[in-house]
Image (cartoon, rainbow, N blue to C red; front, side, top):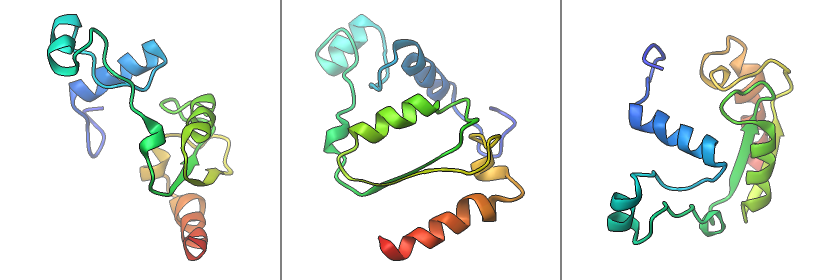
Length: 119
């Protein structure tokens, strides 16, 4: 991640790993003692997705190693105001392609621009 344009912090990567290992979408796990201090409980609380009231459009790629298809579908079921769920029509499209794909105009920009007038 240190070689991508934006990079990432080690804490963000650890938080992602915690989510992947627990299969839960929850706040950062600092350990029992610190969790008790910060959250009032030994484990970090889950994010309450039902409180997201803004309209959300999900765009995803089938070859994304950071956002698995099953997770996208699970998130879509939980979002109270999902207005669009759009799979990029390219079987090899992955997480970094949203930023780096040479044909991004075709696969991401155009579908977003076509959808905006309906929103």
